[in-house]
View 1 (cartoon, helix red, strand yellow):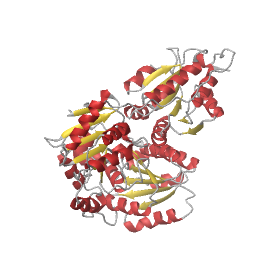
View 2 (cartoon, helix red, strand yellow):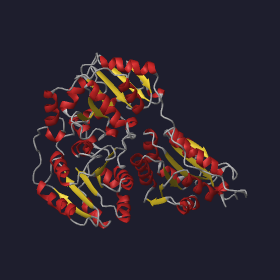
View 3 (cartoon, one colour):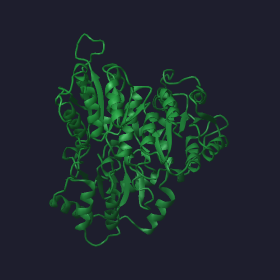
View 4 (tube, rainbow, N blue to C red):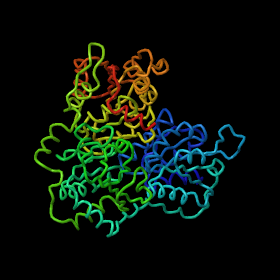
Length: 546
């Protein structure tokens, strides 16, 4: 057995069931070995798309996924997707062939590339240790929640593995949950006992099974309202005290209630500028508590009154065990009625600015929310439009929303939704893109059709990079560099085997209703010509972070 085969087998044995990529000469044998061992290979049309598919699959499946790339240029093509995964602490293996000769056309410092975007590295160094080193990379990805670049030098791939019984590579055991200290639990309970208007904000660290129920029970005991960061959207879906997303996407009522809190507890949530509107959602006398199983994450983005090192579910359950009598807190009858009537963006009145040529993105999104099945998984690209699908399209839970925005890159949305769709085949995948992101990622239209995914791709098409138009336009700057002639994206999609419809008015959405009611034998692209007279409500907030 060659090292290439041993590494592929070891990765599959360690629990990597899905591998995404583009195969070249350097990763051909590695990839085929994984397939032969039982992993599913998903071929993308570009390594950048493959990286984001793998990232999204790992997020929505709760498992470790792999990306396989050719040496040098295959890796550089994937760097933006790898950066997104690394910044999001996605457990991902990047399986990369590597040349060792500096004179090779493919030679780059692959370790430096990975470190530059926040990934960590490992390397297969010998035939004897190859399988063990591959298994160690998977364990590190899982235990440290890291994106790991596993370099496999070409000369090493060709070596013969020493004869003898093959090494046993078992799936890594998940790390033990971090138990909070009794003193921290007491301090947390004391803060909640003194709260009259508590709010819980749950983030990525609250996505694992069991966290929702634990947080909902503790919130009920203390009368806390419930919110999430964008990446955890849907966690409290259906709870009558849910405010949905905290931050720039918050509805007016949600922002008012969060700002009025006297105690805010961030559960597995960074409480960064996006989730707190640069701190403006936190009152000057608000007690801020942050709970995270990584002590180094506490207080990174803002000062906190109390930092608790502990697993989210365990900490919430320990606090509930020591809690006193139930308290009303923020939960009053009047507030319940207000939340039910006004916390969703679709219930906030607005002036429809659409006409015969362009549709208002709010009207579009509300109509799609009504037309599309409730059991859906939504992937969202970046751009001026992104708040509309993020907040107007409801999702059944936190496995119904995949938000690859840690790096704020345009062009990841379609690949995001492909990965999410493969992780959640029980749901209708919905990709929400701008025209810029749709055309950046258009190569993966082929992947959608080839995989037979019954996907709806909605393009919020304003013929521009709308964020820049609305940020720089009011100051009188020329916009020629960020505006484009109209493109018939529906025709582009038809060329890839999609059904497609161009939407200018609500009446045009009848074609979407017909597709939903039909056999869905081909994916559907909705080329929605949206109004471009104003920026999205959250845009000013977003540019404060640049």
